[in-house]
Image (cartoon, each protein chain N blue to C red):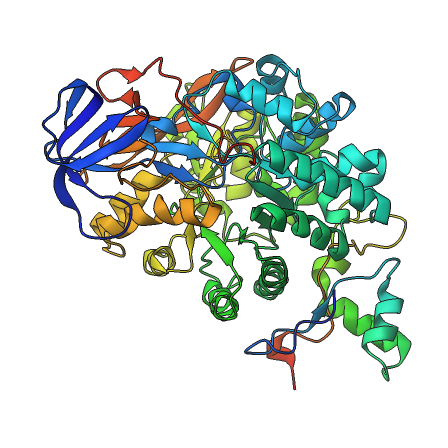
Length: 557
Length: 82
């Protein structure tokens, strides 16, 4: 007796080969047969008119904390994502000594814009080692998790305060190697590091104090397991990005490891020449290196209010300082004080193209609600003011609860982005799932891939797009039996309508521990999501009680 | 790390990783031999604004803004090369 049969679907098996009509039989958490299935099953799903594909894999997320209070990583699972990779950008939740917890939460708050309150209310810290963290995760998982180890945490564990002061000694590097080895043995999928991020005091994160000797030593440990090195490069500068590509290629060739950097953006002002970066990537692949750029599908939208710090303002010190370190009253005072206000307005002049196109997204007062949806240029005209002055005035009138949206800021040239996404040496990812929760929705990038770049622009075929976010990702990350619909593979499956799959409209959901909000997007066109052979979400019934999520790649044998 | 590998298919913009204790003067002396010291430091700083102009908090402190993980370019951007 089979557990499940998915009948009459269009099988898009993840290889990139043409789709075909067949039944998919599942038993014991694995795909048993694809073809005409005549055996009985405990459950049948009629997939007539729907695509049946491997579950999608999201290689760049920050679900580290959320997965502790939300076993489904909502709403990623409902978008067809069956495997997530947390622990990117040098930050993971383990290995972590108790004395460093506040430091780590501060970094998550600063870098990934995750509220402190969510950690206070939602995370019960009962681990220090990576092994114990994995054991905690395994207690309640509806989605597969392939966790990275954060380089900054290795440094904190071994060096304490010196982690943010200096290079490591040979003995300290050796201790970090031993610690990383333990994490990889326990089941970490690789190591992440960052060359750009700053901590809660706006000082470089620990990983930025590592010299190349240290990174090389850690890469040598990755080579023992064939595991991934993920980095955040100086993505805002082409020459720096290329220099990091060369650095990663050197590590990849020397140690025989895969590497990936994220993000690679398309910029309309050519500050980032993605094509030149890709040319270098191609040359390094030709040498035999594996340096995978991660490209996100969605354009960059950023929402903000002045009630919480927004990275949109990080290049404007007089704004960001008060947003990051000031109380509510101090921010209001800074806007009211003529001197500080003058300084802020003058500083904002360095980004003249940004302000006029910002839209008022949300306002509480009766007086300002009619302005919702208008641009700051339109509001400024109505008020006989300037966009920046109008933004400040609206924020004061709304007691900082005016929300603004900067839509389509960058990465919005469909032809260039589509070309990148279809490129064989590009890895589709960089969603940042679970992070930046009050700046933008990090969910629905997979639906957007199909709606925009398969159906609208035709940059990829249906089969090509599925391959990009399933078997390509599994191969790049060494996730053995995932990413393919083939007999014997794990039964992680997304069933969807290829003519309708998309991301829904962005909206604020109040579902963050500590009574917090976040921006999310619901899935469109997804019918059923199966993890480990059981239905984890369906359009008809929503999230289920199935808990078949696995830790990937699993402990090293 | 040594300078960018000379076997690369096309020349990249030449860069180095800092050595332990490096500052602008030591890098200039090592990488821009033959250029007067002050001029060499000025050139290096102008080619590395991502480090030289970095906000004070976003640096190693103690008067040396260079971080061990930084990329330091030792030649100008392609557009400025003779």
